[in-house]
Image (cartoon, rainbow, N blue to C red; front, side, top):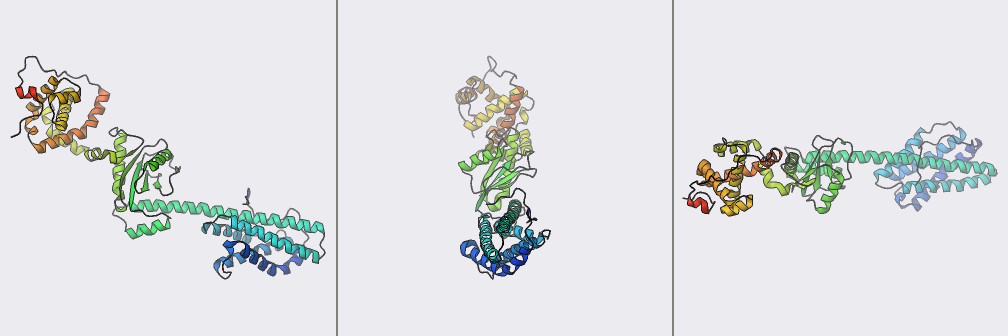
Length: 434
C-alpha cells in the first residue's frame, strides 16, 4: 500500500512536459477512460458491480476526473486541482465506509496507470514522440498516480478516525441509555446498540472504577466492553458474567486502579449492578472491604446489605446496646466481641474462649456482665437477630478503630471470690428459654 509522508494534490510536475502533449492526449480520454474502467472491473472483484449503480458511477467519475486533470496540468501546469483532490479523498473515505482496506483502490490506481501508459506508448509512436519526451511523460504519469493514492489514503485515514470516534460516542450514549432511570424503552436500546455495532446480551455486569487523573486515556479493553472513564465516577459494562480470563484482562487494562465488579443481572437491572459496585468500591476505599484490586461484589453481599445504611445501623445500635454506653471503650468492645461470638456459635464457654483466644473463665465473667446489662434481649429471638445484625455491621469499623488506637483498656479477669451461678460456670449459652 502506498504511504504518504506529506499528502498533497497533483502539483505541477518537477519537469515541465511539452504543452502540445495535451492536444495529442485529449482526444484519447473518452476511450481511455472506458478501457481503464473495464480493466479494473474485470481484474478487481470489489469493483465488479453494475456500472449504472452508485458504485459504478463513482468509479467512472473518479477515472474521468483523474485523466482530465492530468491533461489540464500538462496544458497549464498551474491549473487548479481542488476538485480532484476532493474526489480522491472521497474514494478513500468510501473504502473505509465499506469496511475494506485500501488494497483494492491502490491496485486500481496501479492498473489504471498501466493501461494509461500502454495507450501513451501507442500515441507516442503514432505521433513520433522522442524517447526523452516519453521518459518525461512516464515519470510524470507515475508520480501523478502516487499523489492520487496519497490523497485517497488521507481520506481513508480521516474516515477511519471519524468512524472510530463516532462509534465510541455511540457506545458511550448506549451505556448511558442502558443505565437511565426511569428505564429507557428496550426498542430504543436495541436500535442504538445496532448503530453502535454492539450485540445486545441478555445479561450484563457493571464495574465501578476508581477515578484517575488520566481521563483522556482509554485502556485497551475487550471490544465488547462499553466504557465511560471520563465521568466523575468511571464505570464499565461487560456483556454477561465475567470469567477468569475477563477478570485478568480487566486487571491488566486498569493497571493500578481499583475496581468493583457488580452482580450479573438482566439488562433492565444494569443500574442496580452499578449502584452495588459503586457502594462496594466506596467500602473498599474506607477499608471495610479488604480485597484485590479488582474484586467481586458477589463475595461481599452480606457486607453490602449491612452497610447499605450505616446511619440507621448506628441508631439501632444505640437502642440495643444503650446499657453498655457507660462502660469504657475497651470493656465495651470486649463485651460486644463476646456477645457476637455467642450469637454466632451459641457454644460453650470453652468453644467461645478458643474462638476469642481468652480463658474460659474470662468468657463466663463477660457473659454474666451481659446478662446483667442486656439479659432481657438475649431471650427474645427478634432482639437477638437485631443484636447480631448490629454487631456484624459495625465490626469492620470497630476493628479499624482498634488497629489505630491499640488495645490498652481495662482487664476483665473475674474478681476473686465472686459468686457466679453454677449454670454460667458450665456453659455460655445464655439465659434459659421459657
